[in-house]
Length: 454
Image (cartoon, rainbow, N blue to C red):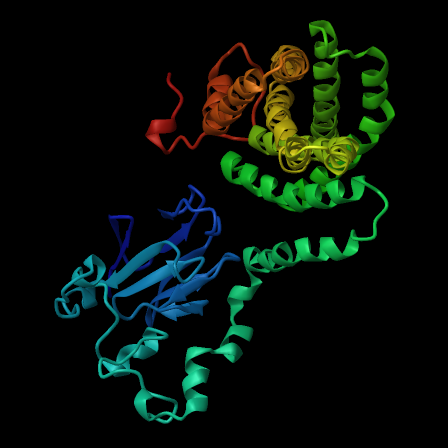
């Protein structure tokens, strides 16, 4: 019976027969691969009568020698790539094969360490895509130099194998196609449009998913499933309705960003608009389903509300920028109009999402820790609302945008700080007796570095 040696990122672990070795992004796995493209429970290795067998258990694929595989026997030393042909590398070897490594190869640390493809052509069955040492052989065993032109191009431009490759099921590849084609489609669709807000809507909706992917990568919520998607859609719908029915009315009648008090009215009005649907969703989930979500999930939901708010807001402001471009009498005026349009389309949603994400995190904390619910909510809304007010006031009163740049930089540093320390803050709050109630995130006491102090 053979033991298994697994090496990832310079760290080796040995597993005895009878063990089930789990690999993936989640901290619960035996081998943790902290990469966003890798599935939370990517695969597992189990010892069977035939030897160690790899079995994919997640949605992301596994590759051997550039070929996708779902299951294979670890009969020799192999190099596994996770999620893509160029993804994170995991080396596997059985005890029986450690003494039969390939001869030393000059150049390449991985091959020199013995993690090279097997040199025996008969052994390539366990190494899909491997190439015998004598060179590539065609389908009939003919060397490449003797192949006809049809076979030559079939090898070098393998359209048929591309069409059957499971890599097409990866969402990121499919997203590239519409994102490359949509700008050209916009040119055709809006060439005869009479509404100046239409281009703003189109390009804002085009950019918003990219910002959302960025926020997801930075915040790293523990799980996004069907429930979270439904909540996100509900938050977006609520934000749109509330903005048109309440927010715009308050801003029009009570706000004046030329003075600080008016700017604060705008700041609190708009930040409450974004935080309110997140709070309602969290409370309904707790009351109806008795379920709490990790504060990082509500952090992300706050960015959803912010992106939605920004997309709607820019549709109100972009017509003025386009009119300025059209009516410009100097190049500088046209440049300002074009930059104003670009700012609204590409940055407006991001700007609102940064503020709303912070309030969303505090909403999640407030729902999970009811004893300090009101202070947490007030603080969570006040921080972004004051930053929002300062930003609007600076852009209205000062003749330079540099003050606004400084406020935005402070907002970004605050947002990124919470993305880095959200879990640590939640952990400290949970251990503090001043906060009552349990969070969904329970400590794994088996990990000494995370165990609560006595």
